[in-house]
Image (cartoon, rainbow, N blue to C red; front, side, top):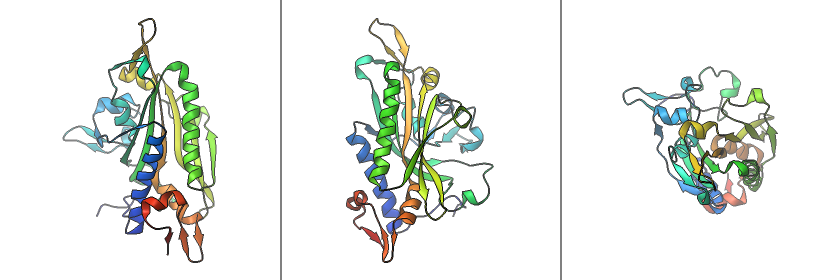
Amino acid sequence: MTGSGFPVYVNKGARIQRAMQQYFLDFNTAAGYTEYQPPLLVNEDSAFGTGQLPDKEGQMYYANEDKYYLIPTSEVPLTNIFRDEILKESDLPIKMTGYTPCFRREAGSYGKDVRGLNRLHQFDKVEIVQLTHPDKSTETLDEMVAHVEKLIQSLGLHYRILRLCGGDMGFASAITYDFEVYSAAQQKWLEVSSVSSFETYQTNRMKIRYKDGNGKTQLLHSLNGSSLAFPRILACLLENNQQEDGIVLPEVLRPYTGFDKIQ
């Protein structure tokens, strides 16, 4: 049909995918995020604005004829919604969430770490993005980290939070926290979310600004986070919730799946 890295989910597996989409979006909108459904293809300017280009062009799928890139994350189209805009200070913060499939070539990846659901070319993810006043940037990052932590806690998964050192962060990021959940089958931690502050890096490229109290135009700060990426969450739910008579689903997902166990 396609090749490795493009999974097919069947029956209850497909329903769990849909359940995670709905639950994650509901969790985010309940926290004040506005839901968007953005396009899956973006132009070069949009990919440049969020820092995917020129750094990651080798990892993105490219439609040559129309010069569009398949998105690696919904961060790209969501943040670009406000490109070249001057926002009112009273409208801040702008809080966005969106579900999309994500596409990544994963060029250069090899070995056992790419097997199964660990590293895919196509996967589903719900993202959160905020555009905020520079003075509120630090507390916004803490708020987003706490939000993702509550979401993972609600799924009953064992997790840890890592603050990345400079050498492990993307060049566009000022501060990044990674969330990892424990895989019982692989006996190791798997990253399921990154929450980052880009300060003015992205907003300078996209010219996303606001007018301060003195009428002066200033750059906003942008932040985003995975909330959450599906494949590794699904793997850990299946691995960590096994009982003799089947796999028990977290209570928060059951209203969305219509079943509480996979037998």
